[in-house]
Amino acid sequence: MLASIITLGCKVNEYESQAILTELKSAGWDITEGLVRADLYIVNTCAVTNMAERKSRQMLTKINKLNPDAKIVVVGCAVQNNPEQFQGENIISLIGNQGKDSVVECINCKSKKLQEINHIEFEEMKKPTETTSRQFVKIQDGCNNFCTYCIIPYLRGRSRSRELSSILNEIKSTKCSEVVLTGINMSDYRIDGNLALKTVVKEVDKLDKRFRISSLECNVLDDEMLDILADCKNFCPHFHLSLQSACNETLKRMNRHYTIEEFKSIVRKIKIKFPSAFIATDIIVGFKGETDEEFETTLNNLKEIKFDFMHIFPYSERAGTVAIKLPNSVDKSIVKQRESKLIELNQGFIKACYEKNLNSKHKVLIEINENGKSYGYTENYVYTEIDKIIEVGKIVNVKLTEILPDGMKGEIYG
Image (tube, rainbow, N blue to C red):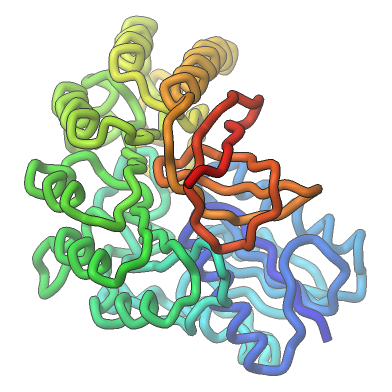
């Protein structure tokens, strides 16, 4: 019997999906991923935007067309938000964000009653399925920030942290060449109630395995944290900093806890400490009350910051958030115009990123072999194509020699 898992949304979902696959394999299932013909599907859903939730529902339609006789278990944020939207005789179980480790049990008992979220204790799951290249490691769940646009704290619960020993043991046991520390709000990782991401970083660096840190709030990157990262021998200089808007008035309405001046100061320090760093961000365009002047302020500040990449999202209203009650919605046609300007700016950032890396030397982790070529990422997150088959999981010395439409070409040296 074949079970396939389909994952929508964030890196935390990806981690949890891999843990679910381990659970299924232990129970005797053959396992795979993606929209292929299978006997059982687990759909790990997302609800960060209306579009993400719609895609989660649409995935069930695609499954039913592929195999109408298949059984389906639907899990994750969209289920937690609105379980009633997932109907159908072949949907045997609904699991929210608590109890994802009980998928096998729910297949047998056909439960559609959601478990209450544990707001205090981190929910441990089985070790994810192995990869030889890059592995996500979940260190934290939930969020206490309550940004006015965001529904995730209501669906994931309050911030809670994984035991440090558990994190380190999982990393030690992996065969991969690189790990990515991930969580819903990793900046709030705590030990005994005290902020402790710095401790995690120092301990992970001792394990002699290349590592990245996924999305961070800018205020966790104080001078001490930047010094710690600079001293790490295995840290990849790749920063994803959640910005959302580059205008103070908009940030205040979003309930973001920093100013654009503070954010720019931190980015300047990163660029000094890590000259080759890849710096990415998220931007919401068309948030409630965003005036032409506020958008122009955002645009000008983004031009000054010069990210390497921006994820751009039109504002999506979510029932149950504070922002739904805010006045002055932005007309959709205006949002579209502003989005186009940001996309154009982002294309310039991407081009500049490739240009500054031209002829530079890096270490590339090989992740894919295809059509006689190998592909992977440099430590500073430049996607690289190499005209040679190299073992997946191997890290090689590469000089970036040419700009491609979706990355750079690299030549092996040394």
